[in-house]
Image 1: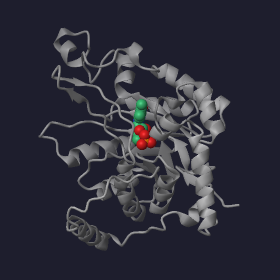
Image 2: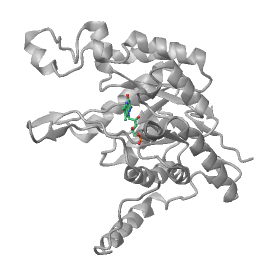
Image 3: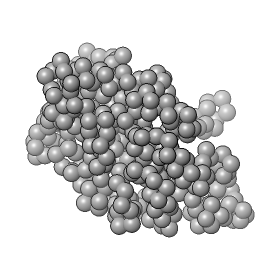
Image 4: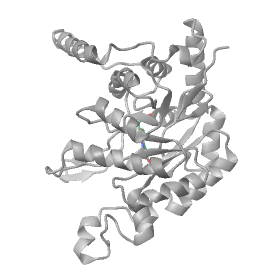
Length: 339
Ligand SMILES: Cc1cc2nc3c(=O)[nH]c(=O)nc-3n(C[C@H](O)[C@H](O)[C@H](O)COP(=O)(O)O)c2cc1C
């Protein structure tokens, strides 16, 4: 019997495949089905800074939506009734899942500032969450703000939470960073226990009939995994945090690749939406078979074996690979199909 256990954010998991942040665990019965089908942990959908500040102060970004001065700027935000959970419901949901399920429950906060809304994390901890995931997505269009100032803001959120919380803290890294290695190390130093590669951005599409922007959610494809797999071995060498993959894991081969590249945990959403909860068991069993076939006794033994050159060499290797790839002419392969 191979040992599939893994440690993620100091939590001991039965195997690496967990349910990623999404509405999949919005209802107790579905969450129970995820656990029964083999999900090793459950990440809840995010609760947003805007929801917390609206509930506490009636404001978003210090602006009152009822004030005519700000009404137009804030009109696109969802009204309280359009969110699946208000802040109090979210806490209740954490308590309910913790009572009913045995797998770790990871809450998710989604916001931008280091302001007082962050104190809500303490309430999530008191509700019993095993860990907290932070999604600090923002689109910064202000040319006066440098990448350094934005990254310092995110690092400060992590530092602030680290000082107030006991539960482990993970950060879903933005996919667009000029220097991911530097930023990952900064977050490690600020006290993050885990990094998730990467956050996925949902841009609206342009409707060419109406010339309007329409909200758009698309399930991921296996091609997205490649960026994650490229960065995992590099970050593995640089940080002491746990590393998880989110984005593009669909078939068992994808999960195995993530382990080989150095992932402690593998989050899945699109694959579960497409294939149902039973896919967790398929992923787990296929990993066990593969480890056995390759002579590994545990996930820990296989993790990161793809390796990467030392930091000073990896840039040259990557650049050389890039040059070689673009010299291969028009003999271009179709997107990878792992199914
Ligand atoms: C319908 C839907 C809702 C999501 N909600 C959240 C969320 O609340 N918070 C978050 O951090 N990510 C959210 N995500 C992103 C997923 O957690 C995940 O990062 C993304 O789907 C890529 O992983 P996948 O390829 O396994 O789907 C959501 C994704 C989908 C499809």
